[in-house]
Amino acid sequence: MATSPPYPTPPGGAPRHAHWWQRPWVRYGALITLLALSGLVILALVREQTGTQGFLVGLGLAVLPVPLLVAAFRWLDRVEPGPWRNLLFSFAWGACAAALMAIVANSFATRWIATATADPTGADTLGSTVIAPVVEESAKAAAVLLVFLFRRRDFTGILDGVVIAGVTATGFAFTENILYLGTAFGTDQLTGDSGIASVTAATFFVRVVMSPFAHPLFTVLTGIGFGIAALSADRQRARRVLLPLGGLLLAMGVHALWNGSSALGQYGFLAVYAAFMVPVFGLLTWLAVWTRQRELRTVRAELPAYVAAGWIDAAEPFALGSMRARRVARQYARRHGGKAAARSVAAYEAYATSLAFLRHRGRIGRAGTDFITRERELLLELWHRRSAARPALEHAARVTAPRVPVAAAPWAGYGGYGAYGGYSGYGHPPYGQPPYGYPYATYDPDAHRS
Image (cartoon, rainbow, N blue to C red; front, side):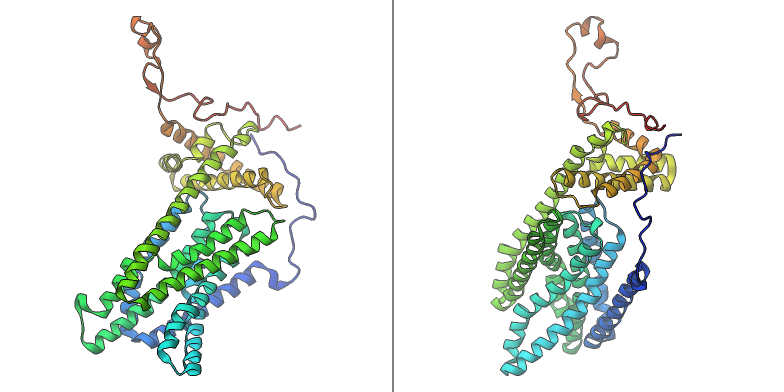
């Protein structure tokens, strides 16, 4: 029976935690408790301002864009999907902890300015255009920083920063929309307005229909800064600090411009929306999609090195570098092996992608000191799933390979090769030839064993 190459156990055996507070369950428990308490407090504060009926109406309306936004960010993350727990943490932090910090700090700062200047109107304007962007973007950036520091293996590039930041901001916008929509509903209840001319309808149109991407757009700039920092070498400490800080400052500036547009009147708001927000949104969307395609090219370029060593088959770099081929492989595994096989293939795809990115960082001199250990871990994860993944990926590569024209020989019409069923028009190239670009390896996984 073929087995993976043996690797020595790291010196000293498994790591031990020196103190009880360093154990993972203690940290997770403390984090969950913090988020739960923050959620309860923010729930009470929002309900106090909107009333029970307003809270329920705001909740029902604010939840509408959430699945679409989360699905969009998850789609971007399909090349190397991060664990769901990171997304759950990010959303919970944005909806609970960041929202609580923002509502408390904004209220305190606005009241202090109003008392100091005796100008409540000016305090509200200053609070929304200066205080709120600084407080809110800092609170949301804290989630990105925590994932960057404590889930470093899951944070390897720009798309990871975009996804974590975007989901965090989606959670924050969800809580904020409950507050604004619930307050608008309360206003309509007092004035007797209803229908499309109501404050609730106007607030819903502006916040949910026109600009559901506003908060994600701001915080994504911070995430891009962290993502570029993740691509930097460990020795580039200044770069790893300044890039996230620059992204945060840019997010604050764009947020301030957006909030300040409301003070310019109706046409000022529309001008900022059309001339700035929409183009920036389009640019960042293009950047995210381009980065995703670049990651797929990296997978195709780096994995052939492991074909030569026999860890993966020759068809896999092509199949793993195509989202369509990946999907076909999972569908094939589900048909022939059930859900467990499909999950195994999906995990294989994720580990292979992580391996390609790790090798790319090592080749350009940006890998960490744990490069060899991490590479071994990923190779072993692939080896354990090879029985389900390899047939599925070979099938996907064969099905999705581009059909290349093969010129018929001059004698094809006279009973030659082409007349007897050979390649006389279009066909799939055999493995080991383009488009795969790498020959079959003759490596025997057991040959090294003595």
